[in-house]
Image (cartoon, rainbow, N blue to C red; front, side, top):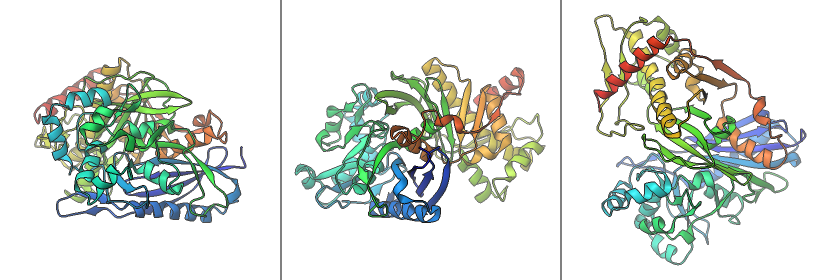
Length: 491
């Protein structure tokens, strides 16, 4: 339906974007608004839920004013959201009971230690696919319940809502009529059983939360409710696509079949492999989640998260001041001595997947008399590709599927040296799309296809730059062996 439009909300850690798509799936306009990062003296990171909601309405209003379209032709809405950020609110007043705990915040570590000491860690991992961690909402909800004035009383009265950001936005945008989440977000709470596809009553009980108080879990392309964004639209439209941001990027990249993979290069990186309709439980240091439930069919993923990828380039610029802008890295990489064997291990706060060593320290390995600025910058750039290679290899071993192609997105993908090196060390194709907002695109595609506004093959319109392996097998093996040896020195 070329004369209709889809609005996509991408609610991320730093801010909120609104994206407008034509009936052909083309991105027409965007609007952005950042929100406060509330950090206290203990380093706890919070967001104001009301600010996020009001910013969502404001970016949609600004988007439509900039686009100057007929608002009657807006057909529906998709939402992608920062995952794991957790909040509680009063179902009677609709007001937050506390600020949201951001996914980065580890204040619930004590909750996890208690649960681990009680011997529940293995059960939780087996049922949810996720290692016990304060990263996930289960412990965050438990912390909020214990430390928010009046929360326990409201929970006992059945008036306390628990949710991730998608649930909060759906609730607010529908004026409290819809209390729902989708399968992708539910699978990241550490309260959802990925085998039974239901809230796990035993695990909920372990964290002191009643499963009856949690949101209804819906297909990712179902109707979550109706909204007019507080009167911004002249009529209510359905919210018809909800996906966690990494899942949205996987869907937006068209990774719909088993073995298809995407990597989002940001401050850190999220690597996901679609493993099909049955879960693959990892034995190589990554986690198992749901990709989505679309068209009534569940797809699972293996996922690995890396803390420091793009952040390494920021460190080069801001802390050690070897570069003045990220754009300098490509030229310096090409200037570096080809046979130099310098490696950088970015274990600023330990190493995450697939090594999981929180005590590891960063290291620059292989320094010689000829090591210069260019070699250091190249080693820091290449460590991004090596870390992603480690995750891809772990997933391939778990799933029994060889990686033949990696679809990528994010700012660092503009670095052609990095993309070619990524292809070389993976010995696989790397595809870079001509679009940047893959999370928001994925939510828009889910909503637009569900509403019949987009054709099911809308994914095929995306143009991609293709990188293919050029490194010899002998050189690849030497480079990877050197990386593994360097990592081994910090473990």
